[in-house]
Amino acid sequence: MAEPLAPPPLKDDCFALPPGTHWTPVAEAHAMLQDRLSVVVGQEVVPLHEGLDRVLASEVIAKRSNPPQPNSAVDGYGLRHADTRDGPQTLPLVDGRAAAGAPFEGELPQGYAVRVLTGATIPEGVDTVILQEDVTTDGARIAFHGGLKPRANVRRAGEDVDAGEVLFSAGRRLTPADLALAAATGISELTVRKPLRVAVLSTGDELAQSGEQARADQIFDANRPMLLAMIKRFGFEPVDAGRAPDDRDALRDMMDKAATSADLILTSGGASAGDEDHLSALLNESGAMTLWRLAIKPGRPLALGMWNQKPVFGLPGNPVAAMVCALVFARPAMGALSGEGWHMPDPMVVPASFSKNKKPGRREYLRARLVDGKAEVFPSEGSGRISGLSWADGLVELPDGELTINPGTPVAYYSYASFGL
Ligand SMILES: Nc1nc2c(c(=O)[nH]1)N[C@H]1C(S)=C(S)[C@@H](COP(=O)(O)OP(=O)(O)OC[C@H]3O[C@@H](n4cnc5c(N)ncnc54)[C@H](O)[C@@H]3O)O[C@H]1N2
Ligand code: MOO
Image 1 (cartoon, rainbow, N blue to C red):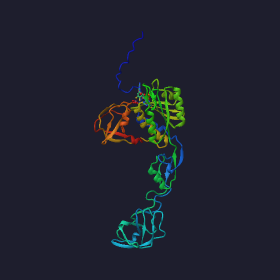
Image 2: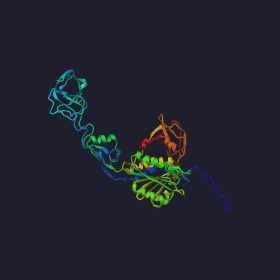
Image 3: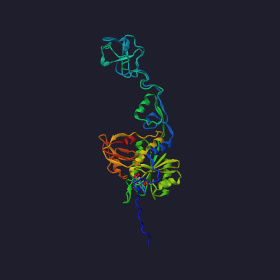
Image 4: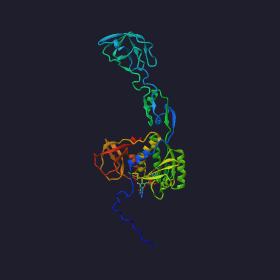
């Protein structure tokens, strides 16, 4: 008869971090990634109107000043300031007018005023424009009170931007306002980065696809729709690489396909070192695998490797850990790979409305909501509690060390929006 199997004794340090294991602190992991990742996408030239949300590959320089010539800020009358004095006065009007797109020909004679409309090029001789609400006119003269400010209502050429000024640096993701500025300064084409294509692959025999009939022992794949949607929100190109069974050959095929259609592969599940953790085994086999045990909660295991020259981020399977690692590690990494640059948002420091005794050793991310300027947290820290991800509008980050938090303690809060979600 076999010896009865005795359970292992509890260790004194069972709640401490495993001895001898190096837990990579988040800051160290960030520094390493930042150091090792570089732009992997090429460039292309697109017409200005296709520039929205694209990442600039080079700086953009204004070709033209804005405005290109001095123009009027108001509807009114142009005159020489030297022809005015304090107190009530009149000036005769010249024939003709200056309108936007239809300039006044010639120079304004001394001692006259000229009708000007908003946006019109300031006629030669005019240095000041009086608002039409401040004059009376019979069509041949204007009467007004003096004391005008010299150059009133005149927009100087280049007062907004001068030709030759740098409008944007490389790496900027273009906004609607950027397109307006580029158009106004004579830019018609933009040299941008090709979009970063990010493949998302789920692993695990337990996964069923939404819409399919799930066996009783199966769960629906929640990570893939979440990660694909996150990539889209970040402004990258999501590539659905499907769901791989716990079979090394099938996973290898799917990884090969993902590597041909994307610049970066995000997987979820199979990242740790369990019997069915085929992803880490496969990356190990390819010789380009590092399993990072990160000092982060949730999301301890992160498998990083290269597959057919494409970087792979093997995110943990638990959906909460997958999302946290995608925000905290994959998002800034995608910035570096896409040409946008490494970027972590700045948190808002807000008072906590919760209590917690945080143990030392791991940086923690709690699902949080901002209510009346205070951070509330989801009552459960379970890494499979997807409802908390959906309940939250951001994350509270607790530092690596030990900390006692009471209502009112300042904490770092990152809104989902600050990551681009
Ligand atoms: N002995 C240990 N076991 C575990 C440890 C550990 O340190 N020692 N770490 C735990 C932590 S923390 C995490 S996170 C997971 C990470 O494991 P894997 O990345 O290998 O993920 P799986 O084991 O494949 O899955 C974990 C969990 O997530 C579910 N899952 C996976 N993919 C999806 C998906 N696409 N949609 C929804 N849910 C998914 C999966 O069914 C599991 O329940 O390991 C712990 N174990
Ligand atoms: O990464 Mo695990 O989800 O910390 O729980």
